[in-house]
Amino acid sequence: MDGAFLLLVITIAVVVLFDFTNGFHDAADMIATCIAARAMKPGMAILLVTSFTFLGPFVGGLAVADTVGQFVRIGGRPSIFAESIVLAAILAAVCYNLLTWKFGLPTSSSNSLVGGLVGSGLYAMGSGSVNWGFNALLHGELTGVVKIIIGLFISPLAGFIGGFLLMGLFMRLFRRLSYKSRKLFVFSQYLTTAWLGFTHGTNDAQKGMAIIGMLLLSAGHYRVYTIPDWAILLCATSITLG
Image (cartoon, rainbow, N blue to C red; front, side, top):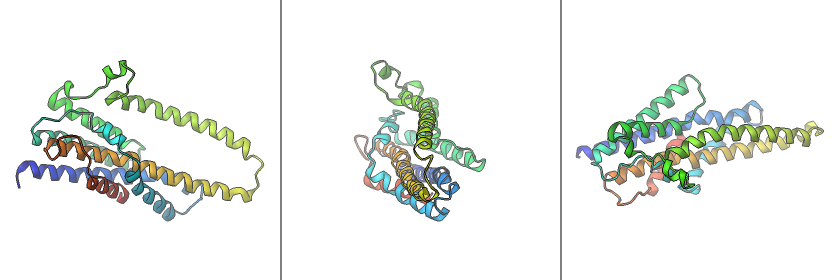
């Protein structure tokens, strides 16, 4: 077994660890509301979230993976060099996940991964290796790091506005409902919790798939950026187990 292949195997193993930490880091956020509202017991909430988290990567497409896989240009580089860049990024993201989990900080595993990729790419190859996306933005296209930065600002604002407006609507619609109508809200908690699990699997599992696709491309296993079926299964399983 040569050094490049061994490093490839180690890096993929760390990707699995990243997805695992992503799973247990974010699962608590998804089930907290339904448990606090006493809509379901913790065991049922976990089962519901994990089931739909596992389903998400298989039916949610690969758009997120394609975005993440193009942040740092490592194609054409020696495989050990490219794998070292990815390994440094993944280890940084795993450490960040563990630290924020230990201190109970709700944060984004995806942003830590992107930051790790940009940081390791900058150090190893300079700013030209990073797909910043500024030129594309001038032509009305969102890509690269700019796409993530805009998402960072928009997502909390969109959540705030949506929560504010929907709460006002619900208070008007359900102000005079009786206690028996609580069953309607319990049922809605099942739907929203399942949807959160599905979108988590669809979105976050694809980060690991993207990294594996980058690794396989740099190692010469594929001529173009490709995410094989076994990578989808591996990432879906690890994030679900987490």
